[in-house]
View 1: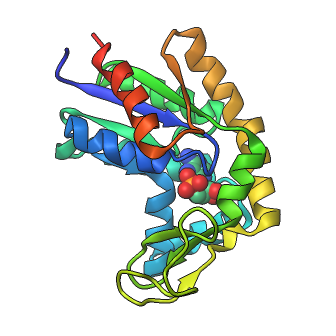
View 2 (view 1 turned 180 degrees about the vertical axis):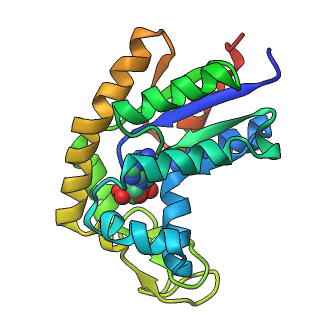
Length: 220
Ligand code: AMP
């Protein structure tokens, strides 16, 4: 197995790609870089980046390419990415993919793998609209699949549970449409290069991770 691992995980919102990226990050000892998390944190802190990103994120629209690309290209130059990285949420459209390709060609070498999380749309809508997050510690619940012991309160810290504004039904459907239109071509682009492995994301967290592990073990 080569010592550097440059991996992308792609999947529609709600496909569990963030959870799986965390597990992969721990397994391989490489950082999990989630553009969605970077934006949410910036919005929470009300930084300059947060102020720019807020309206796009809240409406379920894509933040302009030049902002996201600059941010990711800076991030993957950091020291902790010397052994590789797992990118979650980037690239989100073909232009971002081409920018990343060009950059990796001149600096870090090619991508090793693109994991494509596949889940059918009805299931994604159920997962996303039922998701609730603790305002205080960020723990994630689901009104049906993982309810809190006391409704509306976090089991871990007692914080208030809320629904992310982009998890409301109308925005969820918009995010899924954006994914199909914009990110579909990204998957095609990498598939033509033989980099894509499809992962059935409809099973349990552990079953999905076992499938991913098999793919990781088969990397040269
Ligand atoms: P996510 O958590 O990956 O679903 O991302 C949440 C939101 O952050 C998206 O709906 C976009 O508004 C924004 N975002 C995240 N990644 C990107 C990206 N690569 N390009 C543009 N916008 C992004």
